Amino acid sequence: MDWRTWDKQTRIVVSIAGLGGVYYVAHLEQIPETGRIRFMDMSPKTEAQLAIESRKELLREFGGKILPHNHPLTRHIRRVVVNILDANDLGILMGEPEMPSQSYIPPAAFGGGQSDDIWNPDAAPSTTGGLNPENVKNTREWNLIVVNDDSVKNAMATYGNIIVFTGILPICKDEQGLSAVLGHEMGHVVLRHASERASSVKVLLIVASLLEILGLDFGISRLATTFLLELPNSRTQELEADRVGLRMMARACYDPRASPDMFERLGKLENSKGRLNMDFLYTHPTSMTRIKRLGEALPEAFEIRASSPACSNTERQFDAFSKSFDNFSDRLGIFFR
Image (tube, rainbow, N blue to C red; front, top):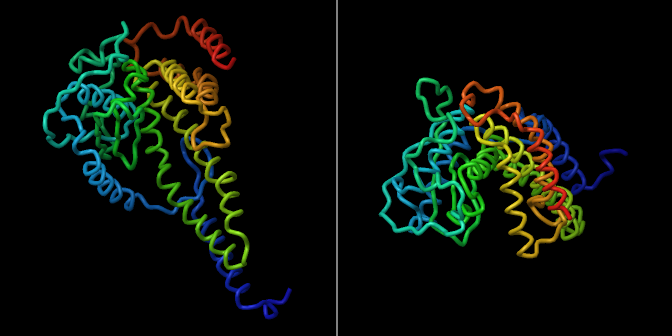
């Protein structure tokens, strides 16, 4: 087909598509932790600026509910974060700003005869981790915000800002479960998922604009991009963060079994709220999918923990691993029925 016979509109679309294709290919990269190829055009410098702006916005949004840095819960959560950062050489947790003292009644579900280490921030940590400035190589700065809101059963991390809502603590149940949640959320930051999503949005906007120029139905194309690109990519990121978070908590000497256990409890909560067991409808995989994937990854996590000299003083390294794994498999079968 002769270029000269194309109308002006078609030439514009083809030119933009061609230049965009070159730009896209030039910004493909492989994720070191997972090997997946992705498009990424956001620089670390931009991410650093976004981290500052994000923290300011979070403090404005949750300022009245943020627990002070010397609150027992905050101190305990900080200790788990520091263990994970230190064991994985991810950087340093910065000090929190002074906030007004608040009274806080721990949710009753957090007890129930389980380990009470969460209520004693000064207790000997269950891991042998802990910040040792002499061994820190990565000086990346992280921040922690603990939000006193039992109605929000969530935690998140964006550009190095970690936000934990107190409503997630009953699901965590103890320090081991807390390490699973924090490992997952910090995994998103390590994998730069927020920047990947921002980069992908640019591509989707350009594609949508080109389709509109060509007169194609944007409603259909939007539906297609949602179910064929956005939601699958989001679920992929969640499973990646699960796997990387599992490795990170294992290096910090936490029990890897706590991760599928935590998602089992989360799954029961999801089921009680009527979530459908259909991954393709959601940004997050179902807990059943995540439990299955984490179960498959447990041997690798146990190997990571067993190979770490820092973990030599934790519970006798999985002499009962095969029994535990069999028990986990039995529980998984019950959960799926």
